[in-house]
Length: 212
Image 1 (cartoon, rainbow, N blue to C red):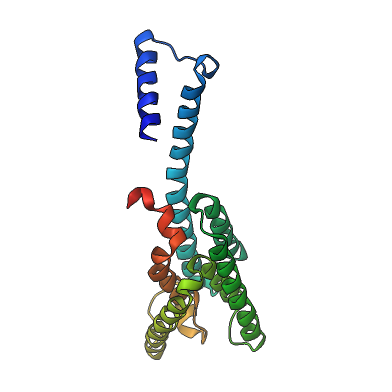
Image 2 (image 1 turned 30 degrees about the vertical axis):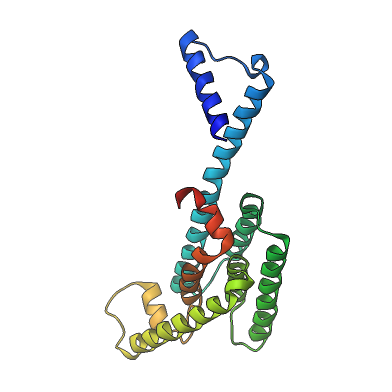
C-alpha cells in the first residue's frame, strides 16, 4: 500500500508539472490499480469512524429521548442495528462472531418481550437493548448486563431521591413529568453501559483503527 501511495504521489507531481489531469484511460494498468486501492482505503478509513460516531450519537439521542419523554423511537434502535450491519464489511469480523452477536441480541429480544408481556419493561427499552447487544456481542454480553444493572441501580436511587424532594420550581414539562412519573427511563443506564462496553468490542475497535 505504501508503494501504491508513492506511485500516486509521483503521478500527481507529473500532472502538476504539465498542468493537466490525465484521464484514467491514459494511465497504465498498474497505476489505475494503485489509484483505486488508495481511494478504496481512504473511503474505508473515514467510513469506520463515521459509523462509530453515528452509533454513539444515536445511543445518546435515545437516552435523551427516554429521559425527556419516556419513549425511544423505533427508528433509533433500527438505525443502530443497521449501523452494525454496515460495519461488517468494513471491520470484517469472523462469521462465528457475527452469528454469536445476532444470537445474543435475539436472546435479549426474546427475554425482553417476555418481560414486556409481564409489564416490567417498555417495548422501546427491549428493542434498544437488543440493538446495543449486537455491538457488544457475546464476548461482552455479561459485562454489558452488569453495567446496565449497576448504572440502573445508581440511577434508580438518584431518581428516588429526586422524587422524594418537593416539586422543582421550574416550568419545564419534562422535568416535572420525570418528578411525577413512577417509571424509570431505562435507556439512560443502557446507554451508559454501552459507552463502557462498546469501545472494547472487536468490531468497534477495528472501525477506530485509523485513530488508534
